Length: 137
Image (cartoon, rainbow, N blue to C red; front, side):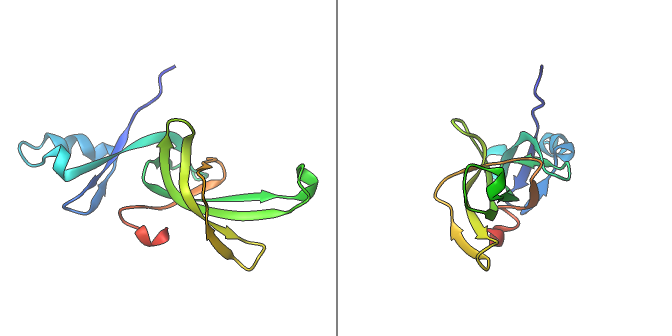
């Protein structure tokens, strides 16, 4: 089974994101770009969010974690929203890198997570990327 490999690219000078369909044509323009100086390439993770949008490295994702006491080994109810940058970490997989955590049960108390949180594609939503929406994280 082959895994599809695709990229999107951030044009550093133009401050614009290019989706995979535009990428080949842009790079083939004779002498117009230096790939190492002008572009940041972001790899597709192989995952899609809950709206079936492809998730790439550098995307900012929001993901909710809800656990009720009767559904788990724990007596404590949890309702967190994680917001963070998507990264591919070789030892862990596709993760949110040290995301911001919003505790929805404690008046939206917010704190920074000191670990990476695995991305669960059916629970997450892409809300931006680190180049165009830095204010989200």
